[in-house]
Image (cartoon, rainbow, N blue to C red; front, side):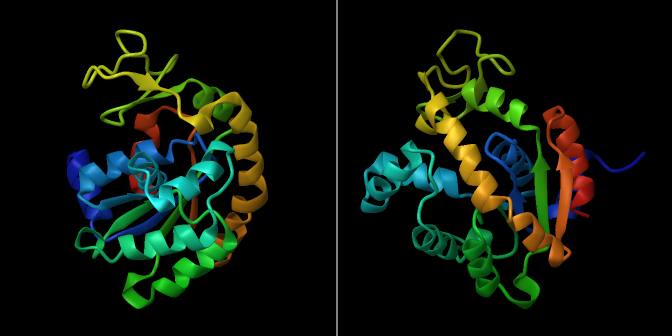
Length: 227
């Protein structure tokens, strides 16, 4: 028998500097959190960072909210500065997973310039999911207004409709998960983020995973891809 899954994850991920790449709704955030918790690496979610800024009504948050509500990408200079500052913090010194960044070629190039030598990217994982599946995932997704836990009306319903199983707080639908924003998000992904596949493929760090399967299967294969 091989080592327990948690031990395997620790060995694989402990010093990884990875980018999780894919369309909205592909499961990048779910898997990044699971891997980060198992392997004790930093999960750097630009979406979470921005939503914290929006909730705090900071200048950055107010600026970003207009773009996020419309399903558009927040300007590169704002995101790049935020990520550069984040990866310098002590908990991200040796290992991290970037979730939601980069989303454009200028962001990818800026990230490469920020990293060098032993600190360069070790893995870029592309989460491949058919668009029809993505729409269903996004439109049914609900987020706890307090603890941030993610649920789904069909795939992961709560015991009581509209109430978080973990903390009992109200569930909300993110503004960018509403029907009017989903189409725009996917359109923006196709035009601005999809070209990153060729960018990272040329650098021979890109790996692809079928993320339309169950989260457990995706997680197990993810660990193997990152060895």
